[in-house]
Length: 176
Image (tube, rainbow, N blue to C red; front, side):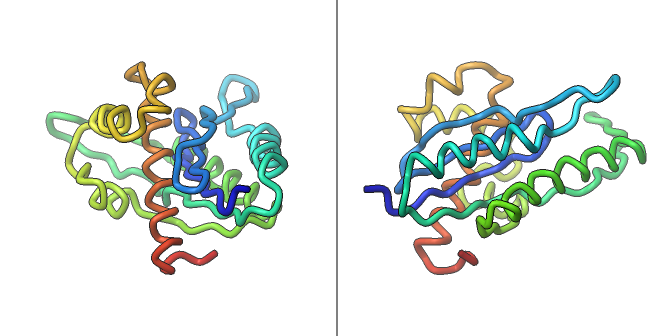
């Protein structure tokens, strides 16, 4: 019988949702996205269906989620320039809100975690995006088939967030 299921969510459109079931990797879903006009947005209905399916598979388990806290990204110049306009920032925040709302409506307690916090825990702070994926392949051999492509970094991040959250629960430091 399953005792606990911890979800980890990398909330961007290229993110994912992963599960830790009693400390072991479970199903992973790329962030479901639906098209609205010419843009994509988080498909909250599909996300809720995934969470409900996992919950139905593990009756009696304790459920909680760790969600990466996101913010608008300031403009940055230099070798890796980045510019996020007002509309992009709004859309990014809207997706984050959709993710939080799914868990709230389903009655699953959540903790928000800064990327720097979970990355520091797993020695990924300051590493490039692919470092989390490569380390996850080693740390989670059963999940490695789902982490083979470079674009699977959102899946890897979600796994690390789920593991961070599960560790916090085990140490009694997360709200669940």
